[in-house]
Length: 236
Image 1 (tube, one colour):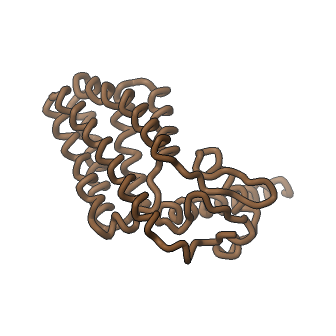
Image 2: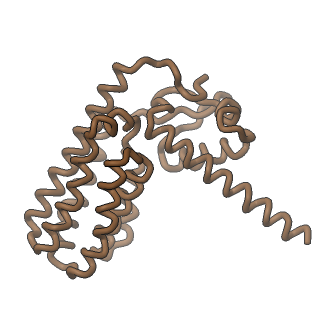
């Protein structure tokens, strides 16, 4: 009986950790947690109304994703990507994703490609509604689902890791300006090109899409530099 209770407690604790991790990701995306700033687990725990333990565990999950880094006896610092970092991540993604998209356009069936369309439409809906969490999650699923059609699981894992490490933060302003909607619609356009069997066109579209995402990041960083530092969530 005690063993069953122990398992239940562990399950509840893990669920709380996941909830806190998702909340922290949302704060990163909204720009409430700023790159380069150190946040303590107790302070964040007070903000979210939970104990410090699930916050520390959630932060360790984010650290494994490369989103934050532990600072001894202080807390966690949100990882700050330099322009060079993002250029390098984008270059690696381009080397992998562009030719793979072309290969999938040549080999995947219409039915396989059409199966991804609902996710592409979810991206547009999320962008139009300003739902940043849904936008990024649908965007992740769309790209990884398409790449999975190439039949190389290690390739998909590699791109998934690159996406985590180069994730866009502070998207609230861009969303309110409508800047994300154009990028969102590029996904359905890419799918249409692939279904038409135009492999070269799909590769070129993917190249432009990655460049567009890179441009959005540059705009986001420009906004962040102009923003006032007040109101940061749980900053030390």
